Length: 226
Image (cartoon, rainbow, N blue to C red; front, side, top):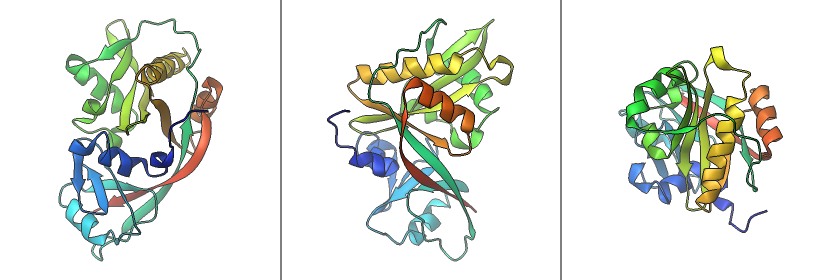
């Protein structure tokens, strides 16, 4: 176990936007959202009536999420769908062998990263998401075939996100190697890695557990569409 206070993990979007990533926040008081260029997530505290903040934010982005407790919607917005995610965490450096060359992805790799992400979940990755942390990838024959990176960040915790392998290159262990590399980079920063995964994604959940991640809690991701 670690000695860090894990309270921020109980509301990771809020604490990320209050602590390490405050410059990327749109602040509506007791409700905060990432700027739409960075991520489609928001959160709230103190049982806030979120309707006014959601109404204001819907002028900036038409499809977004509240992470945590169920939000109250303004009357003109009726679409609200709940997804259940598992929050998983690991407290020790990962030991899975890394056999592939892993490079840090920079702006010159951005188009390759976007092309890969479009295959999996483009709704979560925005034009500046890659600026929230470090991203890493594996290339084969000049093509980016697998990637992962960092998204939410508090003072003590960094979320591993965008774990992607091209469908033509699955089964080669690229995700395990990239997660190991990214997690150990986070430990090198004296922080603790965590991640979120949809509870229905049985394959990735098994992979994370095999690497050493454990379930910390479940989370509701409330999708709001205008």
